Image (cartoon, rainbow, N blue to C red; front, side, top):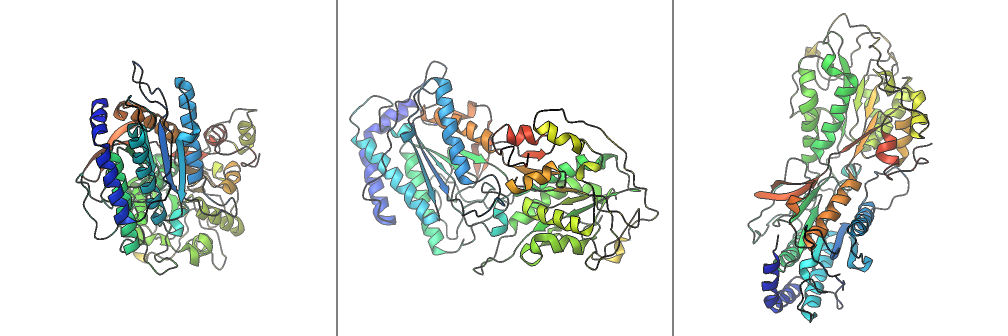
Length: 545
């Protein structure tokens, strides 16, 4: 964080900064003829260190893709920028300070080249504006120290990764990287990052290096830089904002299965039957390879939770794709290509051994990874003749009470019933291989399983209400936007973000960076109203009420 004294000292070197900006612009690409102009409100702090104004904020995000239906995750970039703007306005009102909407600039870019150019133009424009400011007073209009850039780097996620929402961590890296002046280097984190698909492409490298140069200039000149959802090679921000990661997406669904199926009290003599389905397409339409880091890390998160239950026999796989001998490295056993299996519909039918009909094998849980796959699983199970709902398995709620609860008329009724299915007379023989479905317990069990997903698709919310899909999850967009707004105001006022609630130091490249990382939201029928409707993510009509 830059102190007020350091800010004053920097004012004597503004001319040098402008020259550096101009040189960078000539070397990396021409800037816009008329640089963006943002008016900064006076910034300062009161005796408690509370921001006296919002300051100047520039939000740079990828563009939302064209959505022709509601079959898309709730968390989109446009929704996040809207929530950040509203949170800035709300916090300014709470603090009793002015809020100037013209001081908050939003730029959405369709590719990295456009984004890097936009960031560069903005930084040069702010420095030019600051140099032209004649007022020596701290916090005067044009003061770069009261400016924060919030950047979600444009990457190239594959079509399957997009199904988890826009905020899943995607690190921006490329080949032949230049090392950062602050010593930071890129880290292709196995904990969730998927490298930009064109990592060896000269265009990606050029645009990435231009972005890094602009962000470094911004920091060196006294502005503050926040990165959202992804690290950028060769650059360390003042603050990092993390949403979902592959590991967290897998882990939260596995934890829900453990809780709902009560695996801790399950016996290997009456195990639960669980299928893990991870969509993965190894090659993009343009022929480039897709990094498998995302799916391997997702399975690692799943296996950290479910592995012990498979190891001791309390959980088994109807398809035998997983067994007691499986490890966290066996992600290839459960991946499938949704483009070749009707989104996963054919895959679950094949895993249950019902391609040609026949009796229904017992299935207690399906970890479908995202709502797009979950919807296909629900459709297939329904057509196969499975009946009931997720709430029928040791229910925490009664389906008859869901609608009343969501509309605020009655409380959700909670209860528990024992598993009515008998223990099998013999155990599966792992030596028979990994591709022959087996049946235990009853010879024809049509009971509906728990189905989990991720993304909170609007068109799947009614499936949560009726219990066909037990749960979904999503990144905590609104609370994150609120925490980010507070951090931005604090930085623009010269404060220390590490002292804020919800900000903690986390690993970044070779060091630590203040980080905002809210817990994922796990949503089921029992909490859908409080999680999504009351908070404004969806309307009651979206939920089919």
